[in-house]
Image 1 (tube, helix red, strand yellow):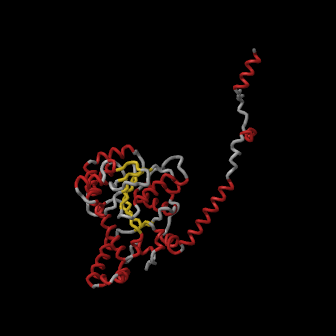
Image 2 (cartoon, rainbow, N blue to C red):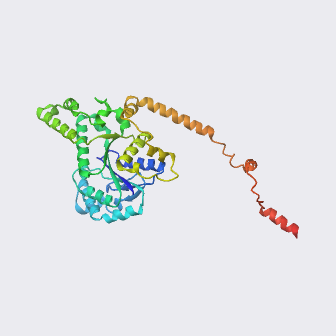
Image 3 (cartoon, rainbow, N blue to C red):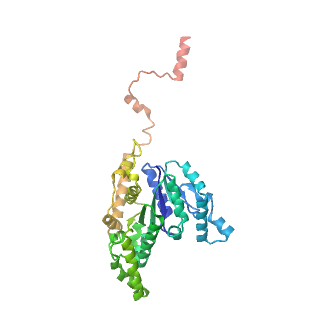
Length: 353
């Protein structure tokens, strides 16, 4: 049974960067992985694209032929892909049992109220794929209360629209220390705790939000999100190995991959570690690593890398040692087979004459 991640999120959330990083990470741990580009406007993918929707339809062609804008062209392209699903079906069939990453467009309307992307996902699931939605959001949204509330509504609406196993992820968490300090610890935002404590900061953000009618609306929105009780966030620093390991473990558990059969009798250490839950990070660890003591951790990791590189250089044998085969003759056991070289064979033939 093949598995797949459906990577969605607003523009700038890092979807293509995530697909590139996750593809490299899975390849490093020995998991067969392929990336499928479903964004007809993405003409510069950094990852090796196993299947590209632009081979079927491009946004430039639609804008020219049908006089549509960029957003309308993306919606039209997804409708065309839904009507011609056999093209995608045949392409996925060639990928076999590979773990698939679907890089989706960034227009939020396609995963909040437009039905084509959801219908495509349901058709993919009928092919036997176990799907999970990975919704990416830039962690910069935490710096403004109004943006955070908007992200909560967006995440909740996407979860209700997609109707699939779903994980929300705050990306670029390693950049969070570059912004103004947050009024609360990181777990307040990731666990979506009591949002009424955020209302005073929301009113301080701008004088327009301090009006009583906006106060009632903001309070109603916070109550709505909390009544559903669905939204929570994981964190990700895509270049950090521990962060990627933790997120993939969460995704594996949510999608059921972690409870499937072993990937093979000759599993690598990384594959075993992923199944056994190695590398779990608590939100307190993330808070300390990327916000409270980021500079200290960066310096510590830099020294570690320098020491490892120095040790690897010292342990490496000289280049000419491997070329001198005479040094190894004393270690090769006698197999009882005599090797006669061409020159010796010719000499023996002449002497017999």
